Image (cartoon, rainbow, N blue to C red):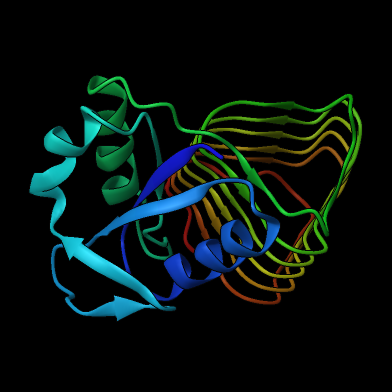
Length: 199
């Protein structure tokens, strides 16, 4: 089993650890956090992210366990740092999800339990596809997005970099959502949104 380190020890990290631990996809060797000490889900927090360089000598896989709601820059900075150190950022895909073999998924994504991803979907780098989300055919999701629980993104829609879509929201077929948008829980989006839109 390949070893992996996880950056972050908050609530989102707990959800990631739960899937990694349960599905036996990797052996969690170290968890790093800049604020917390102690343990998380029976895994010891080894220290802060100053240990990244040291750990790279013995571990080649890393995953971003830091969540994202109001902004994506923290996740992007961690991603860039890990890639600079030549870590492999694998995709963590729950065995309880349904992912079409015709989907194109890049690096460092997590796809949570009961997510459904249709054919010809493109998912960029370091996205969170949360529990119960439905991503229909031909959707394009750029980098560093958070698609929250039970979101439905209908066919051919496009989601710009860093966008957050709140739980239970529905994105209509073919809609284009710009970069770094914030869409609140339970929204119904039926027309295009410009970059930086907050609703």
